[in-house]
Structures are given as C-alpha cells and as structure tokens.
Length: 120
Image (cartoon, rainbow, N blue to C red; front, top):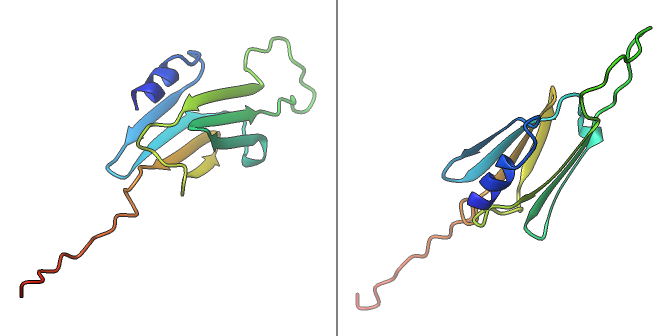
C-alpha cells in the first residue's frame, strides 16, 4: 500500500483525498467537485487505478467568467495496493465525492477446510 500512499501524496495540492483501510478493504475518498457518474471514467487494469473526471463548467444565467481557476479535468493514475483485488470493487459518486472500495485479496472468499482424523 505504500506505493499508493506515495502516489496520492504526489498529487497536486488541489486534489483532496482520504485513504482508509479495514481488515477487508481499502476505501479511497476523492473530492471531484462538479463531477457526476456520467462524466467520470474509472478503470482498474494492469494493477493500476485510472480515474478520469470531467466537470461541466457552464456559467448560469447572465454570468460570464472573469477568472477561471478550477480545473475542468482530473486525470489520476494510481497503483493498486499489492493486497487489493479489483474483483468486486465498488465505486459511487455523490455531491462531488468519489468513494472507491477495493476489497483485499482473500478477505471475502476465505475457504475453511475441514480436517478429518482418519484414525478414529
């Protein structure tokens, strides 16, 4: 997970995130203001997390821009933690906040093997 933590630290200071961990999964919370599910592409491929967010930036009513400082795009490429699995990953965006849940390998598909004593 240190590679993911390092990559997140290397993001621009304008990108706000939280990274949480439980026994079973990682949770990446990333602020993506103005982004909706339709304007967000998220993929996990070759042990990389790719996040491409596009924000619509149309002024309302009779306003026009004097100065623009908020980016229209967010393009992030992050390493998948070594013990994380892309299987059953879940993502949701609500009010400009993306939550990505990455299950840990073996956390949910544990198999218990019964041991039989053949001497009895």
